[in-house]
Image (cartoon, rainbow over all chains, first blue to last red):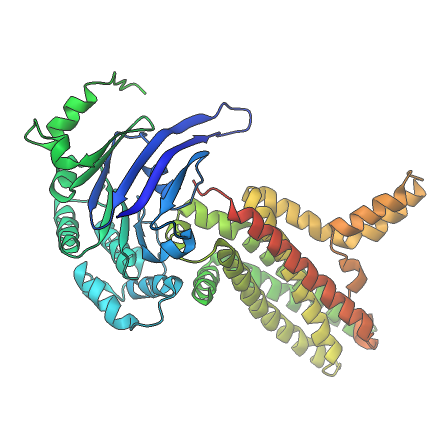
Length: 248
Length: 252
């Protein structure tokens, strides 16, 4: 069963009214099956974050359709979504616990006990000791982890993680990878964009490859790298098809 | 939505800007007392007129700045992204900002109003219900300006929105003067132009009650009801337009 079905979305941006629009997404189509860990890869400026923003309706595609679940209303569908943005900019004057409470309230969950759930997710991201500390005193890795806790607080079925491991030190990466491995044991669906191919290789069974605003691949990771030992080698070979201009 | 209001309010209370505006307004109200004490015959008039004007300027300044910068600030810092990913309609986010503004200005009007009341009482004036009404009307005007600012800020950059909102406030007192000059200059269709201007700007000049004269007069219930309905109408209309514009605003 598909949790999300994207068909032929295109998106242009016009930085100023007198400038020519730039087409960022040319033709993006893919679907994400329920319960899968899906990696979204591509070079800088390929359109990964723009695609995610279209999925979350922060921006609206010029053409194409996005079908949520079983043709659900988007507001209803959002109850299932947990989202971690590319850069963890959160309200820094809040403590970790207050931040989670804000998102718990915004999710409109009434049936459960917040304290219990907050402790569960804080334990998962190893931040119980810092729950009363203000976010401004958190390190980058801690912010990333509280961001993951925030995305998990409302029992999501579908997690969207935009570069969850970028800018982290090796310890932070290992910790977040372990958290994601734990999540994999549950039946959660994850869409994760990343530049770190070894992480995608380790975690994701499905792959979406975007290049210059077009989706070139949407199938299993094993299939993508079948003639290669690692995903990195397979991606290198894939990129060999294109004339890469590093001056851009 | 209440959590959003609470978080925004907390954030703005912590801002130096809010504290400084409140402090300067407090000094302004205190200055009215000083100015009043220099006068022999018009002491109470000076304290009340100067004090109430100071409170209105402070509240309008807070409303303009908060309404035109709060959304832009959230978008710029990208803190709005995680909020938008939650299952709440976008209009509730705007109402969250408006609710915070209402709380901030309520605190400001209570603090400044109480200070002024102490001075008015010390100047030999007794506590007057009209004084509360004058403060309530100032507060209501600040909410009208805040809702207009919020609406403009959805489509314009913060500083431009700020200037436009201040202009709206100034125009809301100057419609009569404008009409007078149009008639004097014998501009063609001045009546039609006046009718359009009256619809585009709120008509604050019709309930400009921040004066000593008003405190002494008995308020007309019809005028009070008109002022209330006019203000609530403007708030609802501005918030509705803001919600419509924000619904399709792209958060890049």
